[in-house]
Image 1: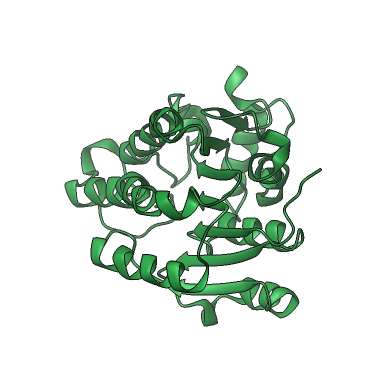
Image 2 (image 1 turned 30 degrees about the horizontal axis):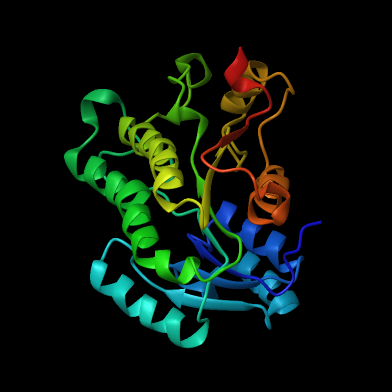
Length: 261
């Protein structure tokens, strides 16, 4: 049913927590994966484990997607080595653990530098990468773009879950992800019928958070736990495969019921 064997996928932010889960999910289906990231893959132990299992399916291209000149070089590389791409997954993003000044802080201390960087990374880079890759995606028989967003794209933060912790909710994160949700709809219209575009919006994913935060977050969900990276695997396979060949412009929320309370 999946029909993913030997398809070719590009994953932005492929060395991040969600990115690596996506890489592993697709490799299990015998997809060839090109990882785009600005991190050094040799310093990421989880990647090393995945690479040992699927080294014949994984390619890595180090890139700063905010820089348009680097995207031009990337396209030359893709055209020369891959000819066409079937799946583009945008998992790139500034998240809560980013250490830039003026980011993980309260409202009055959020900085313009952090704001601009969040929009550049989370939204602007995604738009211009998709724009540049449209031609190679259209060569596929059923091209699929999957953008990774967040429940905070459509829902205001519940500050009760942050009470008594050192975790904050930067405005630029939510704004940039709201932009991704709208961009998905806009692109679905503009790239149809050759390319489908959909979004996955995860809720909070556990990464060694403060116990108090975990308890407060868990109590806010219907399924009484935080998310795991693996919770999005099924959605990735659905949107990437022929199972969703009549689905475009949609946003699938994976949050354990957080957003319906």
